[in-house]
Amino acid sequence: MTNLNEIRDIVENTDHETLQNFVVNLLNEDENLVMRLRLLSKNELTEEDFDQYKKRYQEIVNPNVETGSFVPYRKAMRMERGLNDFLTEDVTGLVNNKYFDEAFDITKLIFLRLNKLNIVDSGGVTDDIMREIFRVWQAILNQGPKTITATMFRWIISRRDHLGDTTDPDQYLEFLINNFREPNQMERKLQIAGQQIEELEDDTQPWSYPVDEERWAKFYLELAEQMEDEDKIERFIAEHLYLFEVRNFAIERHISKAEYDEAIELLKEGRAIEFKRHELNRKYTIQLKELYKIKRNREAYLKELWLLTTKYELQSLEPFNELKAQYSEEEWAEVREEIFETLPENARLADYYRNEGLEERILEYVQNSTYSGDVLTYEADLKDKYPDEMLDIYEKFARGRMKMANERRLYREIVEFTRGMLDYPDGRDRVDQLIEEWTAEYQHRPAMIEELEKLK
Image (cartoon, rainbow, N blue to C red; front, side, top):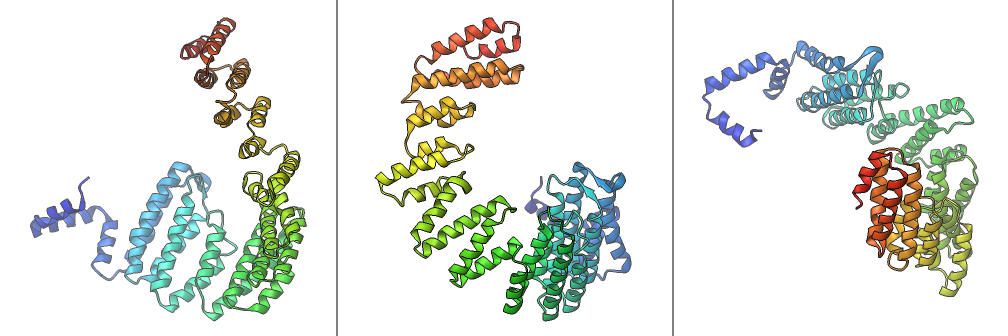
């Protein structure tokens, strides 16, 4: 591809008449380039020009829409590229040339159209387009007069119940939070947030999680904070503490004021609520642990650490090691055994054994495992100390997997797994014995025999 400097050289070395004729012919073939040049040359745009912009966006979208407003994945990707280029170059050009109302009108059309389409969005197409629309809106707000700000506020806030599947509600609310800070706009946003929550309270079924209600509650509290309206905040918290976003806000609020006892009560009550997202139990327990640590309540602190270790944070050894640090070596030996007995079945005990340097227990874990991946996971811990036992484990899994295998892909995987035996003393002999047995037993499976040849 020709680089920018080379292009400049070509232009500089071309006489004016030739260059002018070339540009005229080029513009005659592409109306979009005409519009861009008009903006660059500061020529006044006409109503016909703005109609051309609207036509341009339709030319990008319409060819990609199938029956029933459906946009398949490949066409969605093509539409995204076209719209993003259009928004980045053409619509942003309008903004930079102070055509704020016109730029907003065009983005409104795109926004409304996208929210009526059924787009296959596995590639994040709609997120990218909507992000670009919000970027253009932000540019209009940053550069435009107060009149366009008021116009945009009225229209954008009116879309709250009609976002469709295309617009991310969190992105939409974040835009409202970060903009429109005039006192009357702040009051209007707060009023609408309250109305939305009331309506959602009536609509939310008892068995469903109030996602939208939580979202608007968070929005309300962030607004009230911006307005520094303590009365509204306190009243809203008292009335909506059943929402976890509100509870979390209240907890952080108490902690920031060093009101630790109040925060602890809210955390304990929250953890006792039966139906909630599982990660909240972990979050609340971590917060309780830290608060008890601040208050120097060792007994309560150790209790929360125990819960994290044995129930709420099984994917990490961090609470296990933090708990370990609270005991002497002699005490820990006893506490550790209690933990091992308490951990649920889905905990990977071998990770705890590895942490404690208990190779014999790791070996026992792998010997009793039904998952061949454990052999590879813990091989480095066992290989040097238990070579014979590891060969036995390898052979057990290899034989078991071969009995179930019925296609070349599986044969290939077994061969790769069995190859690990060659790194052990006597491994070659054990592998040769397996090859001999399998060749005789499965002689009518040519694909298997071919794969086994790779082990010789």
